[in-house]
Image 1 (cartoon, rainbow, N blue to C red):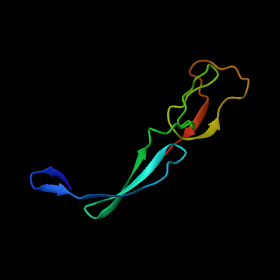
Image 2 (cartoon, one colour; image 1 turned 120 degrees about the horizontal axis):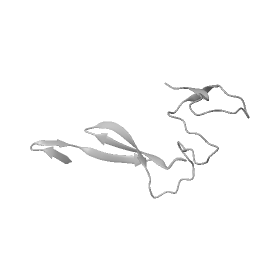
Image 3 (cartoon, one colour; image 1 turned 180 degrees about the vertical axis):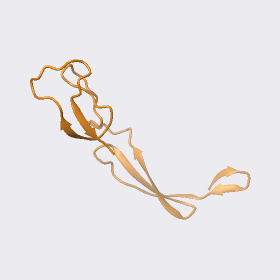
Length: 93
């Protein structure tokens, strides 16, 4: 029982937690006032080697302003480009 104010409380009951996935996340299940809920948690004790949303790190790499699918490439390989030349189109929802 967790008291959240004078005369107000919520009943939380731990049920289960899953094994960590490849990103080090676990799913914890519990009841909140009798209704089953879940929350995704990052297990910070695990070392995760998989990169998510990797940033551009070298001179031959460029970053993307948002997540999405590369729908069209506007330049050819080996083509000389100038600053502010559009390189590709990203589709995002």
